[in-house]
Length: 142
Image: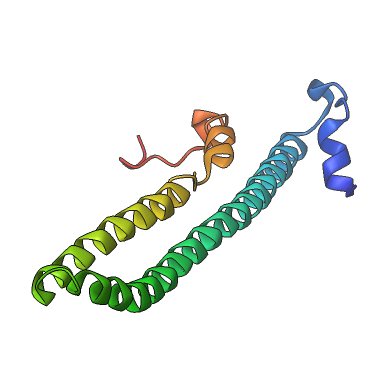
C-alpha cells in the first residue's frame, strides 16, 4: 500500500493545531487519491465491458458466416428438391422466405448479447458520491 493510501485511512491529529497550508495539502492529496481510484475503477469497468462487446461482435460474426453458408448450400439443395414438384421460381421464393426467418432469429440472438453490455455503472455510482463542492460548475463561477 502506498504511503498516500495509508494516510487517508489513519485518524488525523487535531486540526486546530495544523496550519491552513497543511490542511489544504491534505485535502489535495485526498482528492488526488480519490480521482486516481475513480480512474482505476473506470479502466477496470471498461475492460470488462469491452470483453462483453467483443463476445457480442464474435456472435454477430458467427451468425453472419453461418447464415451465409446455410443460405448458400441449403438453399440450392432445397430449391432443387422443391423444383421437382412445382415451378422453379416458386421453389426459389419459398427457400428465400425460409432463410429470411433463420436470419431474423440469428440477428435477435446477437442483439440480445449486445444488450448485456452495461457501461460504467459502478463508476457512475461512486462518482455521484463526490461532494458537490468538488464538481465542476457548468454555468461558470458564482
